[in-house]
Length: 470
Image (cartoon, rainbow, N blue to C red):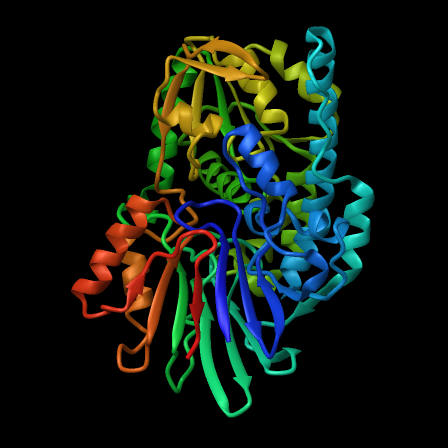
C-alpha cells in the first residue's frame, strides 16, 4: 500500500492524492489548480497518471479546488465511481456545470482579445457536455455509514464543518493480512460557524495509523467567529458614508450563504444602512436552493430560523436580490452606490467578479472586501497584498478602491483549531501525519507546533512524493 501526493502539496489548490491498495488506485479529490495562468492550464490539462487507470474517486467536498477537474478526468478516460456525501453530490451537479460554463465563456472573451492581437486562441479545460458525462458516476453516501469502495478499501464520511456536505474520510485498508487505518481530513471548518454543524472527529476508535491533514492556516490565527458581524459592519458603514459600492468576492458555496446570513441578521437589527444587496451569481442562486434541501448539515440555530415564517428567511431578506442574467449583472456597473455585490469566484480568477472589479477597482469611493483565502498568484492575492496595479483580462488597472481583508469569515480552521483537532489522534498509534493543502510556510509552522506536542512523525510531502503505508 502507498500514497502519492499529486496536488495541494506545499500549496493550497488542486487537491489530489493517489492511494494504491491491492494494485488498485483510488484518487482522494480531483481539484483544479489555481495560479499563474500558463502553469495552471498546463497542470490542469496534464494528469501525472493515466486517468483510465484510476479505479474510483473519493471526494471530500464540492469546492472547485477539490472537485473541479473531475470532468477533465472523465474526458481523458476515467469511468469509475465518485464517492462523496449526498449534499456534495447535489452541489457538484450545479457547481461543475457552472464551472464548465464559466470556462467556455471566459475562453470566448479572451479569444476576442487574442484575435485582435493575433495571439494564439485558448480552449476551455472542459465543456458542459463533459460535466453531463461526469454526473452519473457520483455515488452519494450518508455521514457515519461505512461504504466499500474497492476490495480492501472501506470509507466512512464524517462532517468536516467546512461547507455544506464537506467530509473528512476514515479509510480502512487491507491487503493480504496487512490492515491500515488512514484518515483524510479534507478541509476542516471552524467550530461555531453560522449555518453548519461543527466538525466531527474522523479518527478510528481503535486508533489511526496515518493522517493526511490540511494546513491552510497552520501558522495563522483567526478573529473569533463572534466578531463576524462587527468586522463586516464597520467597513460597510464606511463605504456607505462615501456612497461607494462594496464588492465582495466570495465562493458560491458556503461563504456567500454565510454573508447573506450575517447581513440578514444585521439588517433585522438595524446595524447597517438599508441598502440593496445583490448576489450576482446564478451558481449562488442554485447553491442556495441546494442548501434548503440538506438540513441534515445545519446546526440547531439555523434549523430553528428556517422553521420560522418566510419573512425571517436568512437566505432571502427584503433588500436582497439574486441576479441570474448577464444583462442584469452588467446594469450594476452603471448603478450608483451605495450597494453591495457578492459575486464568485472567491479568488477573483473567473466569473462575474472579475468584470465587477474591472469596472470598480479604479473608484476611490468603492471598497473590495476580501473574506476568504486567496491562493498565491491569484488576482485576489494581489489585492490582499495591496499591489497598486493589477492586471484584469490582460489589462493594467490602478487600484484606487479601498481593500479590506476580514479573517473571521474563514471557513478553514486556524492554527489553534487545527492543533486541537489533530491532538485527538492518539500519538501511540499514529505512524505519520502528512500536512498538505497549505503554503509551505503555513505547513512548516503547523509541523513545528505538532512536533512540540510530541507528534514527531510529521512531514510535508512534496508534489509527486510517495509514502509507503506499512
